[in-house]
Image 1 (cartoon, rainbow, N blue to C red):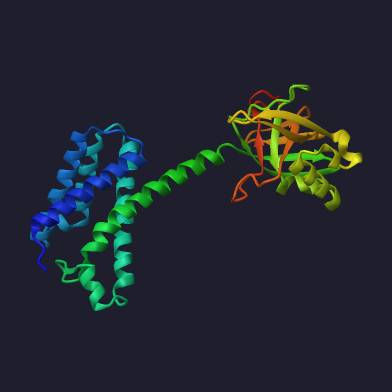
Image 2: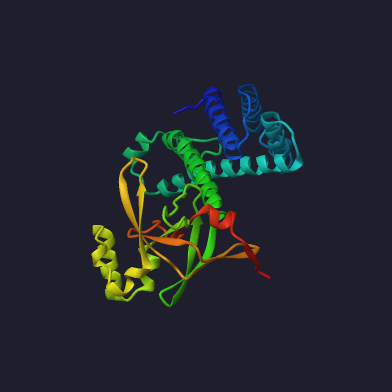
Length: 308
């Protein structure tokens, strides 16, 4: 199969445009479509230069670096050196992810595909006379860019989540245990009787404060909304808090009155005594990254102690 230059330029145009679009998404920069088109055209023009002049200055490291900077500046403009470097590094990272993914797939298929499958994958020779699959390129490239975009979103969410996590220490029932709490700005739950803020912790953390038999009774009481199942010697430590779900359904939260809650921030230690801890039977997360949902008032409005 013979591949003509116009087809190569078309693929390059589409792929360069997709890369620049994903870069703009990752660095959270909105660019006019005219700039995106300009950067894509300039990036595509580099292809015939390298094809027709393989031993020229265009194939040197310095020329490719200069051309990459030119593409980034034409596409995103110039605001600061830091911003340009960030965009350039992201441009290289996305390009390497996309290109590396395709090369990896070709490497895996190199000696493992049958002749009939090679025909289906439309193998052709590139300019170095190496076999490449047009199907792998056309399918693998957009998939790799989608993975890069999705992974970027995940990293951003993880970073935001880590910024809202705190080490907490809970003292209750003559026991003291530590875990990680997540500051949930949507948690506005307050006990209507005592007016105390309520945090919610899962069973993985809370069962440590009870004996095996006591916890089994507490767990059954919560699961069946039957306060009579709570052991008699523990009932004075529990409160039942009514609340409504987003759907408007009425539910009850079993909560304990801890002796003390300590929240460790980067610069200070927050000690809270007037707080309630609701118990959730199911795990808070699938990855055990945290086991409690903290009330925002505990961090924002409570007096603090210096950590130093």
